Image (tube, rainbow, N blue to C red; front, side, top):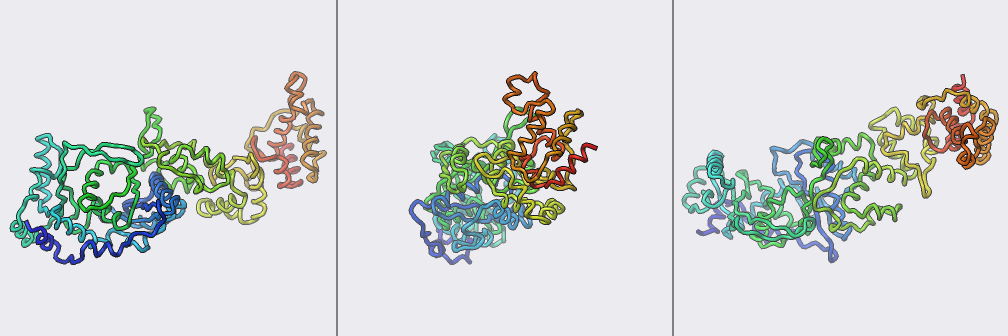
Length: 539
């Protein structure tokens, strides 16, 4: 068969050659060892937590090596496209501090596959010239009939071997169908054999064995739009992609993708197939894949609850590399970008999503922030999810900063906050219209006596040392040990200890059993409010 004639017959309007297009995508001017990676989502839904995982891998590989990380929108499946999904994607990734060097704008675009259809047709026309692609005019009914027959014979489903009806069609038969305006798809002419195995090295999975692809998969649909298989091969070649990070669900297609790269004579990028995130299933004491329906998968859930962006970033880094936590402990003040990320430290079997671990990471992350950072990020969250609280914070910014500064900094900062929605109940004791007694009030004479004696000598101008000595004196006066070590030596000699006395005062002033440092709390509240709260509870 004259394959050049067939190529012109099928795509007469395509006049350019692959070389013409390749000239528009020159080799990138990058330092040696630099990696070019991409995130190539389909706009068929909104971003979920699992999408942040491979994206961060791609971003780290590129930026850590001085390379390029670009965004490519694979929007060829218009039937499943969700309106606004692309815009949501761009906003979401920007929110979670994932910055793209290219896409949707840049020198190696267009970055939307629907704008590259003529490019794909040019390259598939070349495959026809090479005798590696052919038209298929099978109707949906014919394909269904093939499948049913294969089912009866207990054979693999697909278009291959003797079932590939149009693989050996002659020019005249093809011309007749074209003259009849019968739509066709363009299929790859596979030379694979399902009895053969090929070896492949995946940078996460390691050495794996694949069954050769024997199926004549579709390259171009009847409307001339490519399938993912063809489009990603052409795009990764033209955009000089060096590393592809994608889900392990693509492993069954890998043998076909290898065939396509070989058919074109292109160098393949390195592949990294990551396992899907897992979560514990309390109903079966086993693990299952993180479902898009889980709260854990919904990025809207994290934003509404008030997880700091930095907390999510930190947690993802702990999932990617097991040694990240050790590094963070040794480098508490360095940006995560200084961490030497390595694909060799990634788990080939998948990572376990753990809310308790996320919350622990989040507490540590927020504890390292300045009061200014906590205030700013809390306000940004509250202006969307708790407008009344946002107004309260804005009424007296300096007052709020004083509150948030308590216990912040130093080697052992307080870890009271997990999410921004925790801030309101945490600081509520400082605002009279939020304040309430949450702890159980002790029903004892010692409680009342303690409060009465405390306010008799309380002076807001006392140093913390003088202030605490007065509390010790109150303890001694009512038969409590003024020093813990004394109480521990002979508890039978005392009604309690100074810690109990401090708790009485804490409950009256803060309404809580746990609160920030009491001396700092009283300094911010001021003498009148401290005394008035104690008098109110004594009524």
